[in-house]
Length: 144
Ligand code: HEC
Image 1 (cartoon, rainbow, N blue to C red):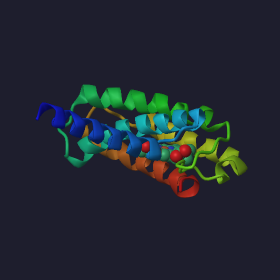
Image 2: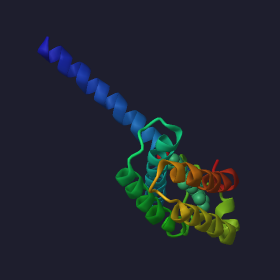
Image 3: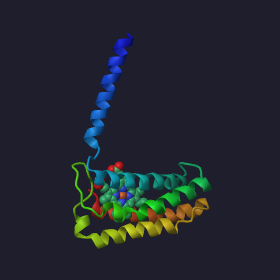
Image 4: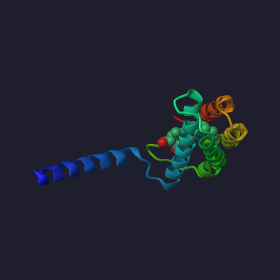
């Protein structure tokens, strides 16, 4: 019985590993930029959940999320500068054909994050529109 459950566990882990290997990028440059976008996404979610009422407003958590979002969006251009491809990447080649525009859109996201006032629920709500618009502007143009 113990042995059987070990076998089941081992095969479950193997399946999980295979699924991960199939979906995750392998190119180190692509991994780094996807990791950066995940940080951008996580911190935007913290603020967005407070703005929508899904999470209670927490001024300290909002300030931390804002600071991390400002720092992460400031790194977008550097993390995307080298054109790298990966079968699972969602980055369009247009990024490097329109590099100045991509950098401008990264700058707009950083400016929107910087402009967000994290001190009250109302100011977070007010700031989220600009941030969401900046994410969307770049994703619409440059993400599959
Ligand atoms: C200047 C362009 C740009 C801006 C601004 C931008 N993104 Fe992205 N984002 C991308 C690109 C390109 C990808 C696809 C990267 C890849 O797959 O190689 C991406 C991917 C993502 C992903 C998927 C990561 C994964 O797990 O594969 C998330 C989540 C994300 N962005 C969230 C955000 C949020 C939230 C914002 C706004 C705060 C934002 N992004 C702003 C260009 C941008």
